[in-house]
Image (cartoon, rainbow, N blue to C red; front, side, top):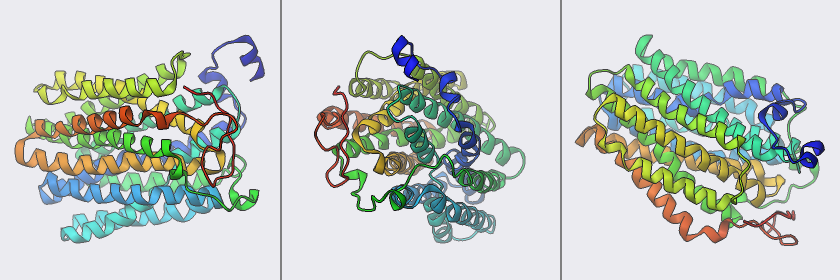
Amino acid sequence: MASTVASGKRPGYGQLLRTPGAWTFLLPGFAARQPFAMLTIGIVLLVQHTTGSYGSAGAVAAVTGVSMALFAPQSGKLADRFGQRAVLLPGVIVHALSVSALTVLALADAPLWALFAAAVPAGASVPQVGPMVRARWAARLQGSPLRQTAAAFESVTDEFTFVVGPVLATALCTGVHPAAGLIAEAGLTLVGGLLFAAQRRTQPAHGHIAGTSRRTSALSVPGVRVLAVAFLGIGSVFGGMQVSLTAFSEEIGQPGVNGLLYGLFAAGNMLAGVAVGAIAWKTGPRRRLIAGYAALTLAASLLWTAHSVALLGALGLVVGLCIAPSLITGYTLVDSLVPASARTEAFTWLTGAVALGQAAGVTVAGRLADGYGASAGFAVPLAGTALALATLVALRSRLTPATPGRVAARGIGHRVPVTVD
């Protein structure tokens, strides 16, 4: 890595993937990340099938998202303190059982309150594998120029998951059985999560071992709070797109095209992530974040005008292209804003914010699609990203990392000398 810095070359994905031990947590981590991509769309498709209402389906999915958003940061805090394995082992078992219960209740035409009751533990137990993988990269690449590349790689992995997950869930639900998507999600979570937890050698040191049990929440860092609000906007795009694309496909009598449309949206996200990781940026992350959200808001403002599969697919691709730069830059800022002792928790706050925004997006878009048609649901991504952009512009000063000698977060007890955008 030192030679990379000395030669001035841009560190690439090949060099990143040659990091010792990387593949031992990347492969099982990929399988264990599927809940975030498959769970919401699997619930929407199953509950809509059994109730005939997108509003009810969106509400159940929203309960799952809210539960995940509330419990994810606590999961991250526990992982920072006691280790990832201690959190994952019980979590994946509870998740598999909860999703199975939700599936059985939905197929039995249980009342909506029963579906809500099952959705709470299903969302609360979603394993936070993405943040855990990011924390492993951060621990192994401390002080390395590969950290920006790792952030981009993780976004690409997330978006590849969002390409594979919804398409797989949709294909299983429409081609095999309406419950097949959730069954596959539970199985992948259980197997992938247990294999990931078994990789103890790459697990970051945690507070219980390192003697840093006294810690303050990563949310005490002002920049993390701003980023969490901004990531609500990205979540609204995911939630609004999932429901609105499903409703659009049903509206035109081609339900199978939903997987293709969402796949194009996620593919744009993945392609942009690859490009962001390959570019040696000359502008600071704060400016890139605001520019990314401005482009995302502009792209989202055109979605409601699409009335054909071709045009909606093209616009979805453009929206996807605008998401990855914002996600990657936000996660990169966390590295400079938060010390290593609270980094997993910080990542889970952002992941939880995406889940909460997705839950709100699914709920509102479902109601709009039921009452006014599929096009109305596309107002959700626009509203969410516009509010996020306004927040970033108004509070951009809080995204400046602490200067050398200043404490990054009061009470965490770690000084981080970083450059200022």
